[in-house]
Length: 97
Image: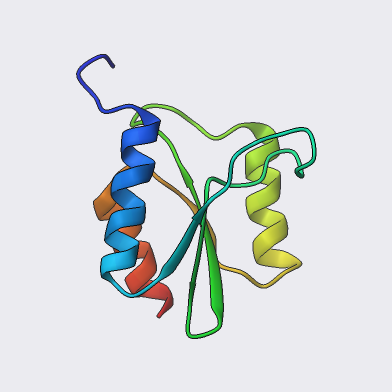
């Protein structure tokens, strides 16, 4: 996995692509005053909020992150997913426009 980009690089590249596609983006930084398991990236366009959890290829979301994804989709009605690359993110963002 050393030859793969870090999660930070993946997140930065995804956010740059989302902005290029016209999305407003916010990186969620974990902390003691934040809901545990919240996904990495919030994107909003035309009043529509979507969430992405960025992972390095071969890495899986935690059980809590999987729970948050289900909660965002089922309770809040927000599209949410795990992405492993800019390509994954672009495909997801284009699918929810």
